[in-house]
Image 1 (cartoon, rainbow, N blue to C red):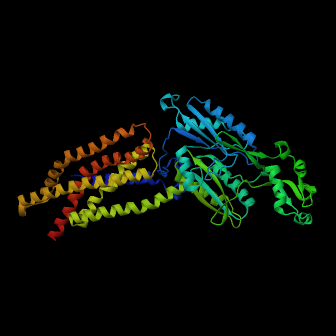
Image 2 (cartoon, rainbow, N blue to C red):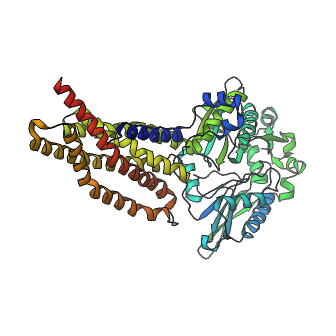
Image 3 (cartoon, rainbow, N blue to C red):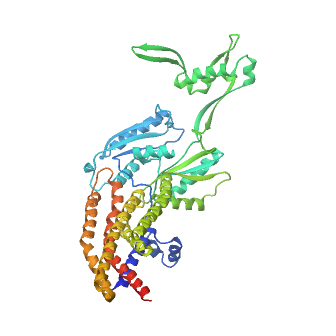
Length: 539
């Protein structure tokens, strides 16, 4: 109370330091400092990163590599068998089960060259000492990176399904390339892949590789077909029978019904000359080889054609490790803007988990100011004074101070979970501030009634001290209860703790800084406000 200015100055310094840690050094200042001392510029705080939600440890992994489109089914099966054995050789893996191609559901249009392997992990108590999930993924990636054209990519089963359902991209970040020509989009995709790989934190970078899919193309000659009195359907029925196969009957075995299909053997289906020898019967009973009625050749084309908003679409996907998602996407956008000249008609968009983060940020920009506005209105209704309401509302930024320091120390990024913790902290900090100010007001009124016209500045200090002393024990007990109830979460290792810890950290740190603010800073501000009131009345 005797050093009010010093107390307020220290509080302002702590608040400024918290803002400095949260936002980091502006890029313009960092560039200016780097001209004089590059090492000092690198040591300046980067700010706390951002992400949608902390990653939830599901206790299992989903491995989704993509091979070249021209890879044969036999080769994909061989690689899948090899990778399952390789994954199982790691001591922490309980089982590995692979699936290639699409399932029977029409909602899963996966190509043959895509493999999905579900990896069940042993409990972490059985892992090697010091091994983490990230280091396990790094070890598996190193073991599985020996196949040419093979891009390993790790996610978790539930996380992957949610990403696929919400964005259509099986990664945390996807750069969508939109345009009107597939060849141009493919070239741009490879350039985007090169740039993404150079961004720190990028892992499992994989572009859409839709070109180089081998096709057998049969182009009937309509003029010759018409000369022999045939139709396109007549000719293509023979092609279907020889290459694709047709059902000619059904065999019954108990309750089972098994279709009987005929077609060329595999060796004949892969031989263009044998396909050209397929006899096509005319209306008069003669047979003409297919090669005389159609052009038969092998071509290279796209493995799939995707579109979005009326434009063809390719994408480059990437996961992020060792840094925040928001910072990664921001740096990626800057690099693509500087280093990638886009052809005419080609545009870039960003998708993946980052879409969820953008939507969450928009919602929080609306919710947090609305919460503070509602709090201020309620405070004004309580005290009938803008000064008193603003005074109590100051508890919010000072409560943030401890939350930001603890969040920075523990390495948590800003996420929806963290902001939920801050919103909960706002209410608790404001409530304790109201109680403190109410007791100070009651103590002040009591002292004025006792002293009457003799009331002076020393009486004001005595009243403030008396009111603050009365709230010391209740305030400490309130903070102790909240902190004691949340601290066990910080030592939890159960599923879901990854989300609960970032939520609890701001509350724990904020309650401690709120305690200091309410017990020390609030009485100083209260005394200053009422001293000014007394001066104005005397004038």
